[in-house]
Length: 280
Image (cartoon, rainbow, N blue to C red):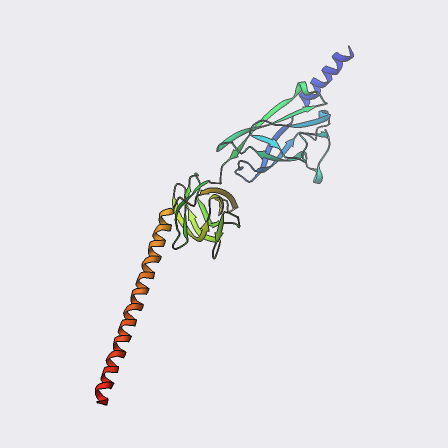
């Protein structure tokens, strides 16, 4: 009998208690895959003392998980007025967005119930807008010359988003010695566009790390590190050309020296003969 009366009381209270959660703020407006988004919910109806103890639970489902430091379940006593006598309950959450999620609206769910009776719970769904603002790149070692020590990198924007104020940096590492500046300003690189950038450097065989930095569409500065494979033998022909070029230069220097020596000697000989004629 007591159980029946208690159940009747809970059902009666739930009929009198109407909780209405709404999403009042999302920061950023477009959630970014792999990053956190701040959500603020407003639950009206909590001013009603008939609600008793009110529970609110964040339901973790792909692609959303709760950030550490935030409780999945929060409580408030019905009939409690918030600051400034507001008749609603403000609940903030910091939510992590899965890095694999695609662009579009994705469902996030909250569960509310009263008097610790989850059998009478109500689930409210909210659409959280997600948009990928980052982009991705392919970096290749396009060419290298042993004679000029010029190394050209090919860069392709393979993402859907444009990159602005882009820079390319080769950090200090054992597989490459950069001569001069190790940072180059590339500028803007739109989606599906490609370009090349040249460094004065001496690479050796192995993996070379290249750091790319750019501004995304919401003006956030992003960094991405790419890895290219270098081989001392990949551009061996430029080394041969360099040797041939050096040999040619040496040949012409020697030839010019011989001609100058011959010219000076002949001139001295002519002068000597002239002096002998004059003395006679």
